[in-house]
Length: 323
Ligand code: COA
Image (tube, rainbow, N blue to C red; front, side, top):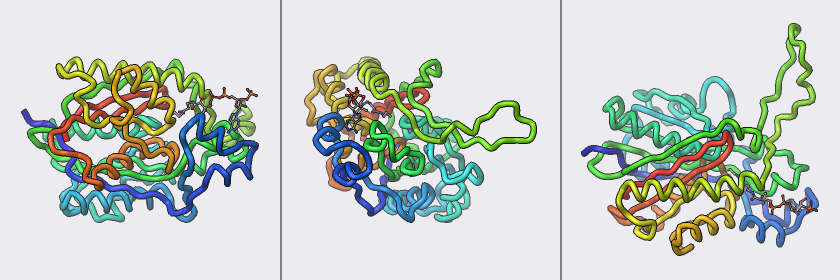
């Protein structure tokens, strides 16, 4: 049976490294607290890069890795909650920059689950035959919507982009389980800066466009939902969690990843991590991690992989695939 398969990966992070020590000069925090509670040591922060420029660099690396030409791409999806502009969308900007003239292009926002939702969407287009070659990108410049005076959030996030090329193949994506719970949206929010109109009766001038989070609620949600979806997918595929060679979870927090490993009774070594270097890069975290593993030669054909994302919305999504 035909499915879709990742045939190339790429990623790009800004060059500027900001350490926990650097942040302790901005807010009342310290390296030990951040490392112990999150596992994060450094993050990359955009100085001249934008969400589009990060996405373009990741895309070009994935195109080269897949040995395809940009004009073969007929679908571009960018997952982001930090686009540079509402119009034109990020995917159209990427199309222009890389010369993917035959693609149709849109952005998708599912916060930190964005890459999973985007890959799922591309998979459906490929399986239906409406597309032949998809470019799926997760790209964020979260540093622009962080309150750099809020120690409970500013230590967690970083900027970056990861990309994959996906094509039809006889093996690849096996199963997907995504979901949302809008009733718990208030746990992770970032409003737009509202412009006042001559006709508006409400005063929105006090609404600040910063990311706000109830860390403990998000923690509990992730630790419950991620193992639940993984177990459903492995059961449906008639395999056990220990048969998965590589777990690539959204890189939010080391403690979340360790708690998931424990619940699944799988060795922590099977859970790849790079959050110590980049922090939480939202929709970019899974494709950046995937690209690092791919380029290190760690992924062997037909091995089982799990991708699992969770975040604002609330949203979540897990993909079981064979490399
Ligand atoms: N440095 C030092 N102290 C800090 C701090 C910081 N950067 N941020 C918060 N604190 C303090 C708090 O003020 C609080 O102090 P108090 O007890 O005097 O009130 C104390 O540390 C504990 O805060 P709390 O929020 O209970 O910490 P926590 O153990 O829940 O850890 C997170 C906070 C954010 C690290 C944790 O909740 C978490 O990782 N949640 C998941 C978040 C996540 O992954 N989000 C992304 C999802 S996509």
